[in-house]
Length: 89
Image (cartoon, rainbow, N blue to C red; front, side, top):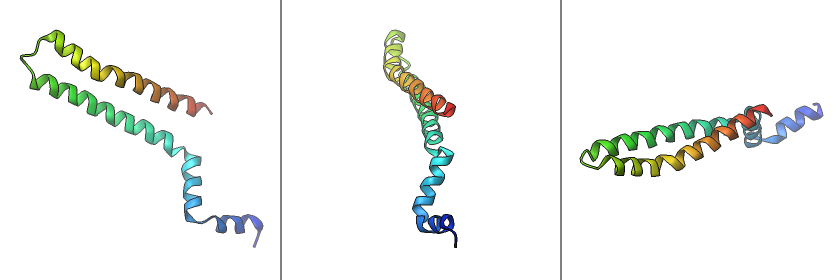
């Protein structure tokens, strides 16, 4: 038995799994997928909020929705930047 094969066998299942995750950068893809899913949830919430409050003044509506979506847009931009920068490596 060669040394490489012996090392591969000695690694164990979890070590090989995490090596697989690291080589394929599953964490980056997961961050992107979760951020896109959460973006859909935030936009869905804002539409539901607008539908539930038809009598609210438009100015107040823009402020409430902007207060929720504004920080999320910044976080979304940071997550996309992290993803794009990590793809270059």
